[in-house]
Structures are given as structure tokens and as C-alpha cells.
Image 1 (cartoon, rainbow, N blue to C red):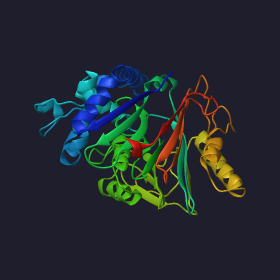
Image 2 (image 1 turned 120 degrees about the horizontal axis):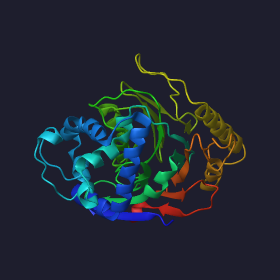
Image 3 (image 1 turned 90 degrees about the horizontal axis):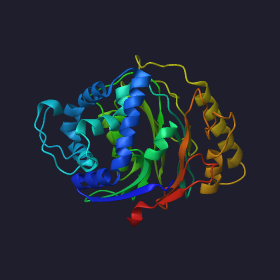
Image 4 (image 1 turned 90 degrees about the vertical axis):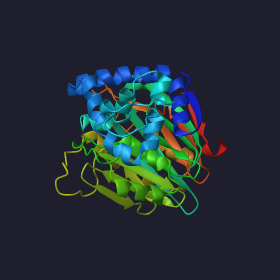
Length: 365
């Protein structure tokens, strides 16, 4: 497979239109996947999913209209199904699908409310002269073909390079200010329609000029459902565990943060603290073991971090996940970011597959 790279520039309308137009086929394939996925995993049909997504519109219209503009170029206020939509170039228009479907795609985590069970392993490592972010992204194999590299050069703010599912405007990557972001799904129920949905929170981080700015934005807005967001820049890294009720921020201790797919910090009263999946605990213990081992020998570099992401301990459910018939999740891409140089390497498929790779350099957009 040859990964699709899309270069977008201009206003949010124009960025969304270019994204939707060039990724049209992949977006439609992704929508078919999630329609079937929601039906199989949650018993929810697509009409119900889009109605749940619309519940976020009043909140998004109040403070995040530029993201709605990118999704479709929607103007006006009120519930989308009850107000007139003035269509301008956005992802939905470019892809020739409905705005409600694109919105639901970007809000898939909140729609599922803890029913999804994806697994990722991430780590941040900052030394006196280097700051790294790295992660494996594990998900359902059919979505491998929906992955794209999305480069965005907006009319204002930092340029962005990210790896995402076609049609989703915020995921894993970095910007020209050296701010990078990774994510880990957390399977905990609960959703707040007056907080920022997870994938849009990732985009808010990528739109930020510093780690601290990103952390402050998420503290102010909250995040709508459970997720872990790992944010870093050349100054260091911060771990953000969000639930629908609270937000816990922890800065790196000793320059390092590791995370998998369960809450690691105490949360507010009332937050469901479901038992962590066994492989999530094992992966976190293993990545800590590897980081501690290699730190005794040398300072981190991209090659060393790529080696950690290749680890197959506890196969087929290790850091480098192969999956099984019963649990088909597998690593679909890995990424190592070097934030001082504003660069990253993305490898598609499992990192031991020696498959296609792409360099991200948002400063050069």
C-alpha cells in the first residue's frame, strides 16, 4: 500500500474541502466500517449514532466553530437538524457525504461511551537537549486502509502534520512549534456533551503553540469522555487522563511518561474505575522495564525508541500487537517524534513488518 498524503492550506473551509475531496474514497470506506462496527459492538444503527453526535453541536457552536467550519463550513447557531445549513467547502462537502456522518466519525469515541476496546502504548522522554514522543496505535485491521497523512498549513497558527483516519481532523502528530500529541483509549463509560470530544481535543493540542497552552486549553474546556492524551514539546511532557467528570494532569517525573489503556492516577468521586485489561497492564509494565533498561546504557534516540515499539513480549498482545482471531486488534502504525527538530517518522503496519514509512516535517510545509 502507498499511504495517501494530503496537503491542505487556507481557511478552515478550504482545509476541510481539500481533505474531504482527496480522501473521499477512504472516508466513505471508514464510514462503512464504523456503521458496521457500531451495530456489532453497541447495537446502535448509524442514524442513532449521528443523532448522538448532534448533541455536541450547541457546545461546539459556542466556542469551536472553526472546527465545525472545517468539518463542513456550517454557519448559524442551534441544533443542526433544526437550523438551516449554509454549506461551504468542508470535509463533508469535499467527500460528498453528510455533515452528520462526518461529525459522528470525529465523535466516535463519545458515541460509543466506553464500548470500544482499542489499545495503544505511548511514551514521552525528555533529556537536557532532546524531547521525544512515541507510540504504537492499535486498532481494527480494516481501518489500516483508511489511514492518511494529513498536512495542514492554516492561515494562522502552527502548521500541522499528523497521521489520522480519513475524515477525522485530529489524531497523532506534531506541529511547527514542536508540540506533539499521542493518545490512549480508556474504556470507561460516561460522556459530557458540554466538554470537548476526544479527537477534537487532540486537534486543539495540535493547534497550540506550546505544551502549556495545550494543557491550559484542555483544563478550561474539559474532555467529553475517557481518554489519555500525552502532550510534549521541547520543554517537557504532560500526561492528561480525562473522564467525563474530571481531568487529571501529571507532568513527567525524571523526564519520562509511559501509558497504555487504563487510568493510572486517582480520579474524582463518581468516575467509574473499571478493571484494567490484562494486556494493558502487561504492556505498561513492559515499556517501563525497557525504558529503565536502556536508560542505563545510553540517552534516548529515535532508533532506540523504535526498538522499544518493536517489542513482542506477551505476543500476540504485546507493545507490538499482532492480535488474534478472537481479539483482532493489531498495531496499524508506529510513530517516533523528535520535537526539537520538529520531525517524526511514521511506520505503517506493525513496526517489525518493514513496511512503508513517511517522514513528517511540519516546519517545511
